[in-house]
Length: 327
Ligand code: ADP
Ligand code: MG
Image (tube, rainbow, N blue to C red):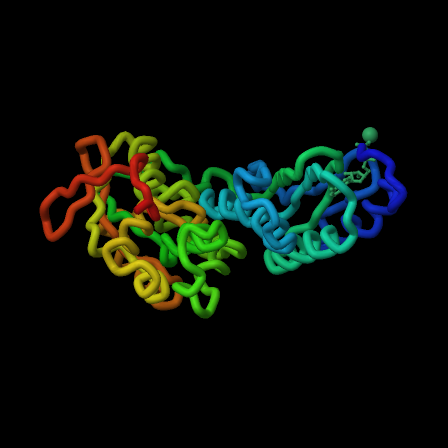
């Protein structure tokens, strides 16, 4: 319940901004408007659920474009479903607002809705309260029984892949926070990679049947690949020179820092997944890397722990202690 100011009533606000946000789906028997939504799951499917909160000043800078906040709040959740190989269907949105600003809400729901529609996700309910700006999205989706991609099914020898070009979003965030000069990103590509990440839902969906394990990269590739390896009871070896980086990132920070940022930056919302060597030809044939934008960066090992190699030798790499833009 939000405090009643002179502007829109809570009812009018919900009607105007949330009733028609997102996609229309025939499996929504009752959406926004009642005490709870009624949703019809397909027979034989498992329900897949995830929730994530973005707090202003913590997960996005104060004053971020409202469309980006709406986009990211959904994108981070879509990315979690992508990592499970699940298809998203429904979302709930819990919004805490310091004030009711109609232009802000217009842009916020515009960003949320555009991404929701592009993934055929319906907004089926939520909650609106007053307080410091924070956005929580719960996502619900489906996967055929027992086919979900888990973090824990990797095996020693499996090859490790990553989609996209990690590091771009971390550089974009640094530019948003004036820790990196905006002139290093002349066409705004890096900022866009932070403000409007592309959750790899289609790739996750296609990886069922190829990948043994999968995780989405939100906290930095090195750390997240390490989490996958740990969950699988393995270690991971990553070849520094095989980590993909965008030409925009390289021209912004140089090749060495670009790779360091790709390994440790975070906010990428790419997929890191493992494929047994015997399945790699089939993967490459059926899901061509040029089309799907992934590449091999290393392999899982028997020995636990995360190791980065450069031209065959192990290099020291501190995940936590890395100061990306410090002097
Ligand atoms: P209740 O008090 O029963 O929780 P509310 O009056 O808070 O219901 O909400 C009325 C309807 O509007 C509910 O269907 C709820 O799911 C929906 N709703 C409220 N806020 C949002 C929001 N931010 N996004 C989507 N739906 C919302
Ligand atoms: Mg109620």
